[in-house]
Length: 217
Length: 157
Image (cartoon, rainbow over all chains, first blue to last red; front, side):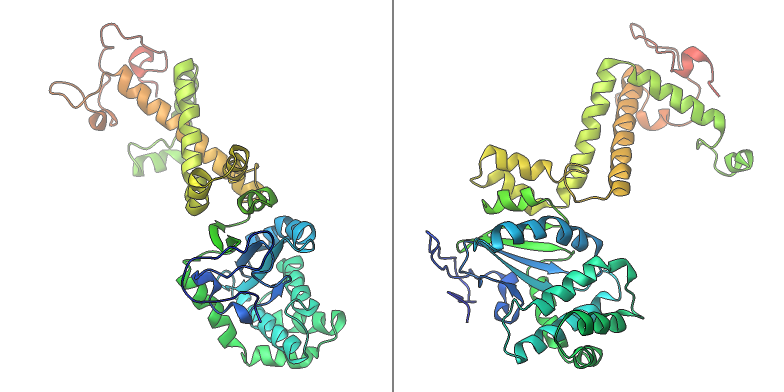
């Protein structure tokens, strides 16, 4: 259950003073309750970043290995910021099966009763970026299975089978539909919110200072 | 090779002499402080137009929202190559080269128009026709003729 999540139209309501706030009716937030989140839950921390990313995208890799890591270590851990990942596989062909594998991993995590911030999903995402140059359409499933088998306690074969069969493609479509409605046409695109108010959109890799300045962190 | 190319592309700079002339002309035009400043301003404008257009919502937010001046500058400056992570090294260098060439081009075009007294008025040359290979006219009265100008240095080809 999202704290203060309305998901409907209307202006944002700021709780202020660290109180939970209602999510504004922004298209980037459509279907947010099904998305992987680095805690706290959306609306509980003062700031919220919703990122549309593609595992195969070099600018997403640059963002992940720069500002997002610092945002996570400095602000997510302190309860000041929530980060939501949404897939938008539009760069290279292997981005689509990788995004499907991420969704299948997230589904497996949830079926096992783990939270939306369970490490299997986020670890796999980090692995895609760390090894981005090594992936292709031909090896993405094999390399995904190898990673999940060696680094997580998930049933790697079952997750990859689900990804091959595109069982969670509807979740990918939820994200791509939200991206289209929010006019996110490139990756990465980040939508920044603070205390119920939509602040701005950041496209491409930008520095930690740009995020921190826009979110007043 | 360049001769055959030159014959197939008449009017375009294809030979070594063409490139030497262009480089010499650019160097002499930019030797003037005013034209050098114009080239710099045009380069910065061209670079800004490109990088800011990639993040218009963020630029608008930086300009109109209730942010401290330092935060506004941090956001805007971070959009430029090598000042933020938006561009890789190769992309950044290429962007700077294109911006610099744009600045040089603008300075040379302005030099050409000013020094040749080009205008759209009757009896005057036009910037459109002067870009062709017509014979150079005499320097206008009262104008300083730069050595880069082909009217002073012969055909230059």
